[in-house]
Image 1 (cartoon, rainbow, N blue to C red):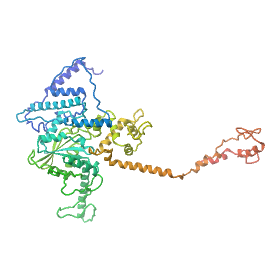
Image 2 (image 1 turned 90 degrees about the vertical axis):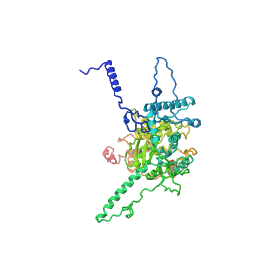
Image 3 (image 1 turned 45 degrees about the horizontal axis):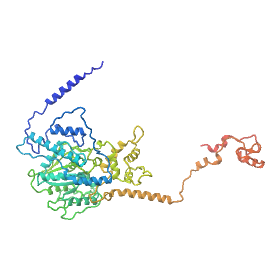
Image 4 (image 1 turned 60 degrees about the vertical axis):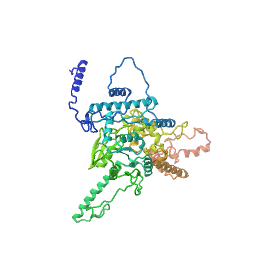
Length: 617
């Protein structure tokens, strides 16, 4: 006998008892801490609602707004009204993009991040939290009104108040606020209102832009961006956490090898190593050659003129296009700020920005050991934390925040790594990739042939998402149970390649066309031209020497293809299939048609095994 299931009343009763017990286990601790930038700093992060929320349904958005406002409502049956939702997905045409960009330019001053309300010593913690909720609610209502009146669609942005509280605390305690942006599209990740808010908090704070993943750009591309940010009056430095980490790992291997070689000669052995030089008496040890020279992504050495150092503390500064090393980056942080500091004797550098731009990776590269967990999924860091690099220099890592923006669509945000790939519910982001990456680059990268347009279509049109995914699925063998290419699985792989930089597309400054800013695509054009030239040369050769198989030629010879029977040459002057035959011709054909008649005895026949002897293996 199985266990008897409890009735509905018993289940409901247990649920009510559990809810009452959980309500009674509330926080009994009195809130005695000061409501400063250290509010809830390091205390019981697990009880905070630290789940990033960038998109909500209309019902969830309504309930969250009601909770922030602290209001109650009563639902009436049959008193409903259906409001059609605005289309928030899809790709835009060129005309729609131009019209939308003009509308965005006229209304960009409405895009603001929420501000922390004013407080002083007389404000209680409960009053401060309620004031923050009210201010955040007013901010969300202003954005909703902007969408409703101007018919503008905002990109997904952070709707969780706890994440904005983290940003407020990082800005308040930092002397230098560094926005980390992706080098492939810096303007998408730069927030102008964040720079204004930093100056509103304290005039002595300094804004700075750290262009991460800059190793994906060439030297000329970095130089163009450096000049653009210099005209904008913003200090910008180029950096690659991954490339610098690899360089430091290589240096450590060389140092370890040098240490071993230093111990071997003490035993009386002579060892010569090309990577080591003679001992320097001033340093008291072995001097290591720089095996990794300071070069750009294109392999050319970069030289900076004297007096043009990036990060100058003067009013006039020069943005360098060099890829900075770890020590140079730390010196840059110290040089850009020379005013009063939040904490005397200590420089605090706050790292803020969108998710998945490399804030945690930058900290780990600077500290040379894993202090912050890193994940490819956006929004992995849940709360800010402070880490000391050296005495007097502190780094503050802030959770990634998606700022409200008009610039991009949801498809572009997924392709840029701002939104997780798992949130993709259709193949629209793949269509965005097909529009930005040329057809020959896709084919050359994956070694596939994408189906060409039909005769009634534009021959130069980009491939559709389905065409790319079908070709990729066939090539990788990603098939469904019905024998069709698995487009969903293929889409995730292609998107990850785009986010990681395998499919590279670099956005230019506003005054440059995107087609003229892609030098990495030229190598695929050269490869296509080389293959076309090869095919032309092959077609010009009139005679191609072919190797013939003599065995097959003898086997399929016409003389050997015959039935093993005597057959009938002619009967009564008539040959089947040929008509009447003359008497003289019949005798001559008898010898030809019956090769086994090699003798005068008509009754003697040659054995079949002798006739088929040439066919034996």
